[in-house]
Image (cartoon, rainbow over all chains, first blue to last red; front, side, top):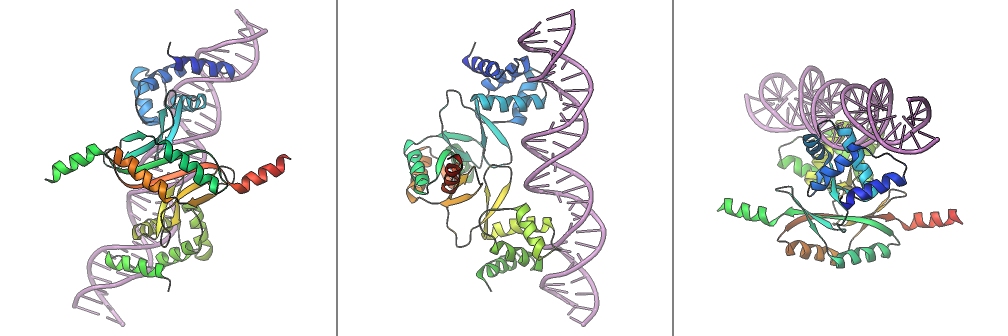
Length: 149
Length: 149
DNA sequence: TTTGTTATTGAAAATAATTTTCAATAGGTT
DNA sequence: AACCTATTGAAAATTATTTTCAATAACAAA
């Protein structure tokens, strides 16, 4: 059994919730999904494999998984909440491509440090942050250059 | 006449749109508002001074002002779009206080530079970004310490 | 000034994402 | 097996945003 299921089980036991097939099935699908998935997308994937599971259950399960630390809610400001893997994925920022909509994960420890300093300078006590850089990814730049020639 | 009205007028003339009292009234109210205002809030302020102006007109005018560069749309990921002044305000990032909800504007040219470098390293062509640091502001820390003693 | 064209207004409706409700079901303890 | 109550899922509610459309008004041209 993958460790993710163990984490979910432990959380459920600890909180005196109930183990249900739906919860494990949603996790099963989420584990196989890459990248940053919206509820709408995820619930369609879930429906394919487990047609009986409704949108609301996916919605509630993802909130639960976020509580366990298995996933993270991310918001790229397009009016849709997305979920990304958090277990075994350390913190990172995002490059958001305006052309293809891809989200590229990046990390720079120096920037992280300087952010903390910047907050400290204002007497602000930070506990999380998000950095999103919007622009055009290398693939889309290449595609655009080809077309315009 | 404040320069902001001139900018709006110029834009309207250039695009062959029409000068209307509503548009100037919304700008008039927005100019006097500080910080980061939601459409809901702004439209209530507008209603106080100009009761005839409806929400939809405020909505459309703010989109127009965003086009002129007089305001900026900002999204702190709480499901509400906010508008901040852009004219005579240079780019900055935000400290978001979880306790009082205030948004503090900050800027660090070094971080800006490093962000560009980080993007460049991935072959990514950036054109904008947003950095939001969530936490507790100095005022709320002080208030909390007082209470807990 | 008047006329004609068409952009703008604003109430109401539509859309879209998220969240809640509630009756039926099912997990798990006794 | 019986009980309690968490969970499910369809439908409804909520919330923010966007569109529709008939009435109005801006402004160019006569």
